Image (tube, rainbow, N blue to C red; front, side):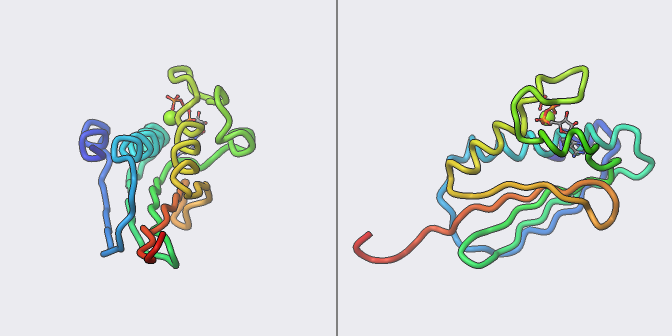
Length: 138
Ligand SMILES: Nc1ncnc2c1ncn2[C@@H]1O[C@H](COP(=O)(O)OP(=O)(O)OP(=O)(O)O)[C@@H](O)[C@H]1O
Ligand SMILES: [Mg+2]
């Protein structure tokens, strides 16, 4: 999916998916989250000389962490304050609901989502999803 979004925009993809434990998710909803984050990343890099989308999946304590990084201009201060609020987008096209939907989905799965600066320039979004608990008598 990311490949399709990226291909038409001259974006290269670097991906690193580590072996992780199992998570129990609504696949369509998590696909929606990934699609929103990838679309944002690709859109952010529209005018960047360097267009690299990095997707990483890492096991953490009790959860997995997925990150989507871009080499775009980074978040503006005003965007950062209202990032996950609905209708706060800064684009002419787009309702500005992508990230609010992402947050709703991730939090309903017991995870967290946040944004930060990509060390490499640009923005990184990270979300977590808790591992399936295998305790008896649950
Ligand atoms: N990777 C990114 N780099 C820079 N700014 C970003 C990035 N992702 C999101 N933003 C900023 O956050 C705002 C909100 O993003 P969000 O996905 O919620 O809405 P949108 O992309 O504007 O519209 P929609 O997703 O509804 O089509 C964007 O308008 C943009 O200003
Ligand atoms: Mg969006």
